[in-house]
Image (cartoon, rainbow, N blue to C red; front, top):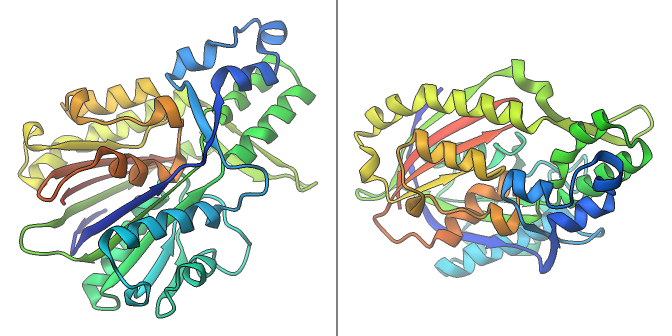
Length: 334
């Protein structure tokens, strides 16, 4: 699916918790060396993820989203009452109902905004941007807050408990990917595109045959269960991006050297390097956050974009991906 953009990013906000948890800490929790013959440095060496941030057991997804949304609003000096729609894009939600965006709207003071949630695993944020863009294109909203908050540390703790309860090699391989994630919040404020800035194109592709490579769900007893087959899902995402990238450059009328920043979803070092390679972007133009923050799931795109510190007029190529499998390629001028 291809879509012309009608919006631009007016402001970016992000939030990461203070608590630092290393990969070695988590590997020690599952006694990786004595049980599986794997040193506690194995996860960091495999993925390049040295640490991540955890928000704590009582944290809700909206807590992190609110912090990121507040940062985005403050950066552009916008009155929250000017926001016409709040779109929340996280994997987890505060409640089954209502939409988590309602709490975000209330806490940020966006009293004039319509609210809805968009969820699509790690890919949710780029989907949320496209929905916000469509609302701006139709005139339904002038200012849209797209926001996410992720606390996958809760899933990581469940994975640790599950591995400790069932310490087989197979269970270790299925669950260890859940230890790569970190907690964070991210947000953008979208407005109508100007003559010089805005999203030029959105491109989306989904392949449901890969759905079971990475999932989590609740079993009959209400226990969270799932798996993350890191190598297989990463290889599939790379193939899907590779099949689209040449046409994306053609549609944008860009060459790789025209791109100021490549902002990619970052489950780890190898994938990030392959994304940069297939886009023909040098690493100094492909900022990374995975080393210290881990896989930020749906917050990866806005947090990396915020920390890169792009300036007005910069050309940005976004490569999004998430289990399912869904990918996106977005070209925009800030």
